[in-house]
Image (cartoon, rainbow, N blue to C red; front, side):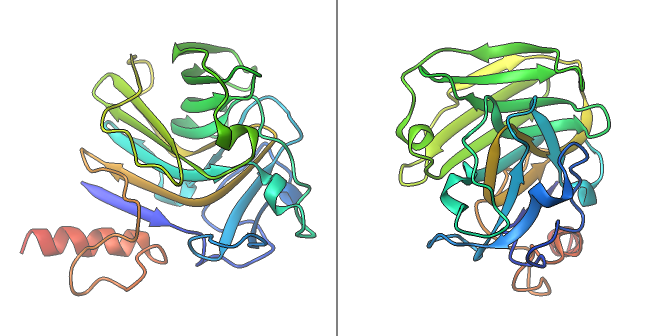
Length: 249
């Protein structure tokens, strides 16, 4: 079991973050910036913009390939709110931005939990087969578009792979996470890969976290024991090692 967390505060500003991979997005559109919006968790955000191209993957490649049960949590909004920053274009939420797991950044194969920006809204769990953008919707339904999507507000996405079941929750920042999963689907085609984002249009991320082998993805820095750094997001792999040593005595 392991947990990882970042609020992007540990990364240098105005350049792409080390340990993240975004092969389908140009360097000028993939960058960590000091926030122009108040209330950001670590004072910085990860900006990903791809001009409404077919949905594409950005992964936390430093964590490597994760197999089996995995959960990811992210807090995101469109990049429109950050257009005052000189390095941000400020794009609308694309057709299917959200969280991704079991992703292959070279082929863009993945499971993704998204909100499609249709006028009536469309939350869905989708399996994408590669850069040709062929995909299968495993779970989804049309609903009235939520306020956070229409007004580019912060929202949380949580996506979990447990056995052959995929589970998905979403909620506005100012609301409480639903007690149960709002969507679920069954699929066994992909069993390992990287974790990260599905990006279409403009996506800004305030935080991203991961839980493996039954652990939940944490909403804040990981509490791992007395020897762990104060901010485990800076050395997430070291923090995980400390956590395991602490638990094993």
